Image (cartoon, rainbow, N blue to C red; front, side, top):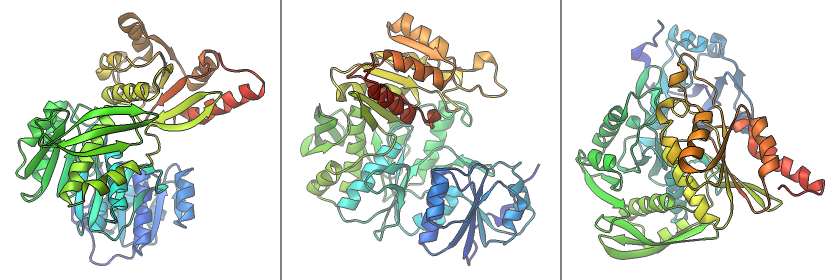
Length: 488
């Protein structure tokens, strides 16, 4: 079995040219842009080169080889960065193993080039990482601290998921997923945290973690990296987070809904897609806040951001202005369009807890509206039966649920696979929620044509493109409107 030479897994002293294997991943493309903006000559390769990442890289004039091949390394770059998508059977990785070219994983490269010289602020947890990072980036930007960041979603305010700033802070999304085929430890163990937030800890990523305890082990290692003069900001509403926070050698500030915590919130008021709330520090009123999002979970994400920025010495008024100006993140409660008074929303939620919290947030944000939920189980975890029962409690806020049958995971038995048909049956029998399962996206669109009516809110939940269902639904609604009909 091929292995990359361990002694070459390092940053060379002199680097001018860098090649990225798997460059079309969202994070890898962002890293390519950051490296190019820093003065390096950048190239890349990927198996599937198509929009939007192909357009993004083309605008940066970064050459991309379509397909993996040893010839892609013939220019002998000074460094190769190997993406998580690359396996040890990859022909280009095999060719790399036969050279003396130094290589790094994506997290190693991000740390070596951008994090180690800055104050690292790492947002970690099973849920809320992208939103919390984005809120923090926007608030620090408005406070004129000019942060550098790389985030797993596109910030509407910047039109990108990365930025090179001149300030001393780097905002990193602390992903617990593994690093590369040659490094199976979690990505966030490379991010040198000085201030860290843990929003939640639940079982996820069933393809790489055996159980919840193995995930806790990863978070214990992460917390151990925070220096004694650093800070851990921990959601104490989550008992697993409390357990892990107890192992920290640095100061710990708790946050959540209980006023006994270091940071708490109260008086949550949602109206017209925005939420106002009051923040308390050690039980004493600290400041009023507002964000253009709905849901208690997003208020808690904002609370963690306030605690982080407070540690940096920013006044509450500036923090409030920054959070109020936050323009949102693509694929997080993103309104894709409104046609015939039918609102189509795109959201990344896929874990049972994230689905539940997102739907409750949307129900409160659109009071009096019928909430039609379309869900695609797409992750390695959601396509396994491990969450079959948990999902039954995830759709309580929905009025109608349409489920797509997932693509089976090769090598698993029928009993090990998730069934949308079974979930639809369970939702009807146990929850009295109208639910249906469909074999493909076309069938879902056909059903939506029949069931949607004016005033509905359609929440489409998936961590993938879902066969472009959002745009196709909007086009379908527009066509029906042009024909003089209103969906019923």
